[in-house]
Image (tube, rainbow, N blue to C red; front, side, top):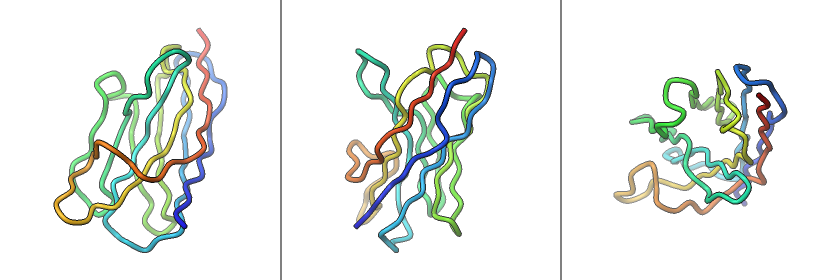
Length: 125
């Protein structure tokens, strides 16, 4: 079955950087929408960045645009989120999500079927 395993979270001071990884397995379909969500305590989960692995438009939330960069290594089937100039408001649990782009589906999707377990990012001021 499809599995998404995140890693790379941790604690960092404001202005620092972290790179999150999401190793995907259990499928061979090549056109997949993958991305990152985050959820801070007491807040709703929100989208951070998304990309179609087969090529296409990348989407970033306005709060992270220019600081965070999403990428995908096809050979390793691993999704990355490079996070730079981190701010205390970036503190949250970060989740990897994926779903297949069959038919006329467009990335980012309104709903995702597959989710990772989450990795905590804590930014201190």
